[in-house]
Length: 432
Image 1: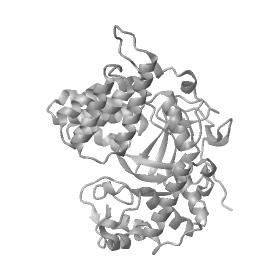
Image 2 (image 1 turned 45 degrees about the vertical axis):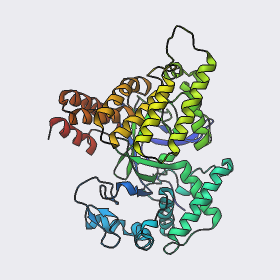
Image 3 (image 1 turned 120 degrees about the vertical axis):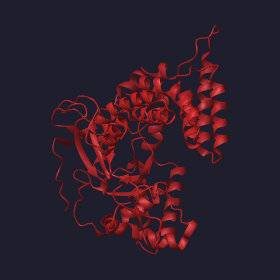
């Protein structure tokens, strides 16, 4: 029997209408660390190999590579040895498959979970409140598309891992993939770049709100939960599962599609920010509701097309610019659909090393972000960071330092004052 040891100051309880939830048994101030949770299993994104240690997720130069596959990189021999039980699932296969080795991050994570479950005899430090096997999976709510995706993941698992892993039965695999679909966390850095995928069972107990009072950030392979509002004893703690930039209808659609519930938080009930988010231009001719509805439909479809594209950067940038041109007669520049396309355009310009273009789009995005996102938002902090670094690269040092200082003020709250990201940013500001 794996007995629960609990987490100091945190209580698990039945949250009305939400199922399991977490609440505080003490008062808590903004920026305070409520609890941390090591990853039960995790996997580094293939794109980050060579820049980040596979074991501890430390970003540093001069990482040592695995002598056999030459694909995995580590801080030192100690990290390599610790990581071997997981890396051995892939090392030989990467050599055999060569360029054809291409399992998804989800498949890679599930392979590691299966390997760990095989040898687990007692509750892990990631499961002080909730065992991985007891995470919600919502299998009964899945549509055919998601069922087919799970079957494709299982086929990938068998294809790439059958030589080094004994699999549970098909039903158990379906359950596990469903659980990861609902509870997997994308581990991100300070600029919100995707570092990898992980599962944190205790963090999975946090319910969602579009007005969150806590935020989840990462320190290596540990997830940390910090307060972004004052929290009273007995109050439930909520994080946000989704990007909060979008209006109520979009948020509810995303929550239903991925997590199978609708939100009833204050913002979803009042829709108080929706008019600001779908801001239209004040023209002499009044814009009809039908025009607004049609124009909302257009960027949603454009965003979906954009996600599916695998084209050259210049073509993607043209798609963004065409979308912005199409929307601008009806939508204000601070409308979230225009902002979305401008943010994508900024990212493409950065990738193409067109820094002037990136700044031009970034400046249009920055101010509306500070209005539309909550005060202590990673999205605002990451924008200030990117803009600050861009300004400095373009010899606009004082403007750059000012943007970095604004990023720092948010990061000290959401990451903690002793986080590497914070100490490194302070050095950057000082010009070290």
